[in-house]
Amino acid sequence: MIDKLLFYGHKNVKNQSLKWFPMDTEKLYLQNLSKFNSENNWKDVDISYDFNSYGFRCDEFTSDNNIVFLGCSNTLGVGLPLENTFAYNVSKSLNLKMCNLGKGGGALDTCFRLAYYWLNILQPKIVVCQMPEETRLELRDTLKEVEEAGDPWKTELLVSYTHKFYRKHWLRFPEQYILHQHKNLLAIKSLCQQLNIKLVVLDQSIFRDIKDSERDFARDLAHYGRKTHKQLANIVLGKINEQEY
Amino acid sequence: MLQHELFYSTDSEERWITNLTRHTNNLLDSGWDKNSVIDYKFDSHGFRNDTDEIPKDSILVLGCSFAQGVGLRKEHTFGSILSKKTGIPHLNYAMQGTGPLAAFYIAEKFIKEIKPKYICYLRSMITRLDIYEPEENYLSFTHDPYASVNRARKIPYLTSRRHLSFDHHWLALENFRSKVNDCVELAITKIAEDNNAQIAILDCCAKYKKGTEYENSLLRKVHIKARDLMHEGPYKHEFWASKFLQELKLDR
Image 1 (cartoon, chains in turn blue, yellow):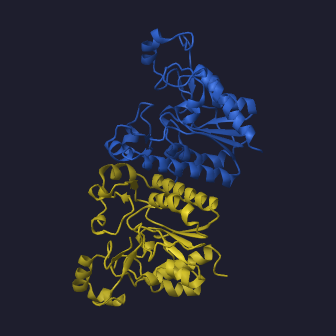
Image 2 (cartoon, each protein chain N blue to C red):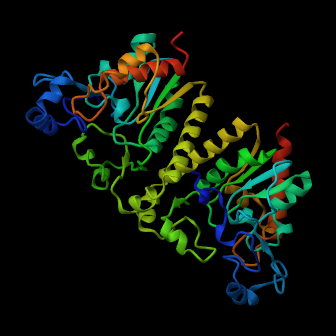
Image 3 (cartoon, rainbow over the protein chains, first blue to last red):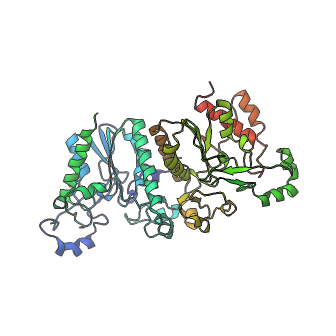
C-alpha cells in the first residue's frame, strides 16, 4: 500500500485558502508594521494562500503541459502573492501549467520525495529545483505525531532543527549534509534523465548572486520579495533557454 | 597500510569459540572445523582487498558484510567468483554494518578514482542509517554492536541501529525507508553512468525460489553458512555471482 503522506505537500492545509501562512503570520505582520518602507511596503496588502487537494500552493494537477517547481518556502512563495512568485512568472512566460511542489521548511530530501512520486504522474516538460538550505534533513515522524499535528507549520514530515539527534550528529560534520544533498540531487537528475525531462537547478548561491539593489523582502521581512523573485524568474528563464530542447 | 585479521566483525574469535562448543554440528555441516582459518586482508582504506593497487577496468563491489564476505575465505566471495569467471579483476569496497547511504558515500568518493567498468551493488538492509563520521573516535558514538571488535575498519561511516531517534524516526515507516533506498540507488546509478560504468543491483535479503538449473542447484545448498553461522555461505555467493553475470550480460 502506498503511504499517502509521502506525496503530500502541506497536508494539514489541503483544499484551504489562508490569509496567513508561517512564517508570514499576522503576529509578525503587526510587529513589522513599523519596519515597512518604500522598498518593502506590505501595509494592507492581502495575500491568499490557496492550497490544492494535495496541500500544494497551485491549482489541481492535470497531466499535460506542466512545469514542476521543487524547493522550500522560497518556491512556495511565503510572504508573497502567488502572482509575484518566480514559479508563477516562469510558468506564465512559458505558457506552461505551474505545479508548485515547494514546501515550507522543506529539505532536498523533500524535493526528491515529491519528485519521485509526482514526476511520473505529471510528466512535466521542465523541472526547476530550487535547492533548500543544505543543512536541512527530512525524517519521517511517527504516525502518532502526524495525527496530533494541527498547526500547518508542524509538518507531517519532520525537519527538526532543534532535535538532539539532528544537532548532535547531523550538523557535526559538513561532509554529512553536503554528501546527503549531493545524493538527493543526483537522484533527482537521474529521475529527470530517465523521464527525459529538462532540469534546471538553482543552488543557494543564486540568491546571493542577485545584486543587493535588486533584492527585497516579502511581507514577513524574512523571505525574498517581489523584485528578487522577478530577478529569479529571469535567471530561470535564461537557464531554460541555455539548454536546447 | 595493509592489515591482516584472523577474525572480523560477527566472525569474531569469541563467537567462534562459542560456536565450536555449542553449535559444533552446524559448523561441521557448513564445512568448518576447529582448524578452519580465514585470513582477512585489508587495504589501507580498510576495505577487503589484498593490495592498494587499483586495476584498470575492474569490477567494483559495493554493499555490506554480505558483499564483503564476512565469515568466508576471500575466494568464496561473489566478487572473487566474478573475477574468476570473467578474468576481470575486482575491488571489494563493501563495508560490514553499513546501509545504503554508506554505499552511496563510498561510490561518490571512490568511483571517480577507480573508474571501474562494472559495479555490483549488493543492497544491504534498508533499515540501516549511516552517519558520516570522519574522526577515529566514532566508535564512542556508534551503537553498532560489531564496531568495537572491528579494528580493521578505517572507513569513517557508522550505522546507528539502536539510537533513540533512529528507532523513533527512521524505523517509523517502511515506505519512507524504501524511498530513501530508492534515492540512493538512483544516485549510485547516476554516478555509474557519469563514469561510464555498467551497474547491477541485487538485494542481499531477497528470497529467490527459482532460477536456472545451475542456480537451483546452488539454492539447494544455501543452508551452508559462513563461519560465524550468520552470514551466507559460498553457495549463496556463487548464486549472487551468477545473477550479477546475467544482469551485466557477462554470462554470454
